[in-house]
Every structure is written in structure tokens, then in C-alpha cells.
Length: 79
Image 1 (cartoon, rainbow, N blue to C red):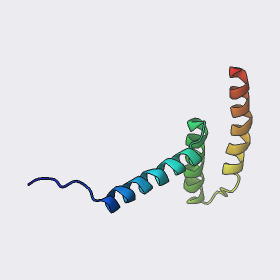
Image 2 (cartoon, rainbow, N blue to C red):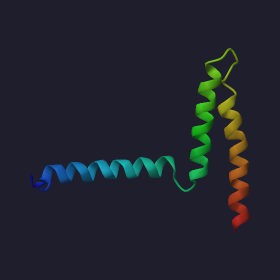
Image 3 (cartoon, rainbow, N blue to C red):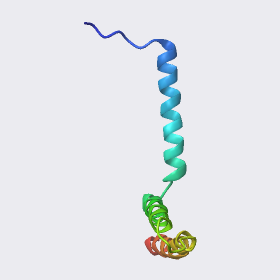
């Protein structure tokens, strides 16, 4: 069975989906993938702690408070 080439609407839909994915990747990951990874880990840890009896509201702000100076130090050290 031969594979038919995609039609114009299918190519347009694929192009829009790819542009959408690239936008969100650039928006979330941006210039520093490490920051995005730490935020994902902090969100997961916050969720896991919230499933216990311990208050979890402090975990994400603490992660951001530690991450911001570390990121600025790392970026200014390179230059």
C-alpha cells in the first residue's frame, strides 16, 4: 500500500502544531534548561509533600529563592 503525501491542510496543521510546540519550549525552557528542570523538580516535590500531612506551600518559594541567586551567580561568572 502506497503512502499518500499529506494534503495542504494537513501540512498547515502540522506546521502550526510545530510552531506551537517550539513557542512553548522556548517560553518554558528559554535560555537556561537547568532552571526549567529545577522548577519541574520543585513542583513535583511540592506535590509529593502536599500528599502528606506536612504543609507544602513553602517548598516552591524556597526553591525559587535558592535558584535565583545561584542562576545569577552562574551567569555572571561566565562573563
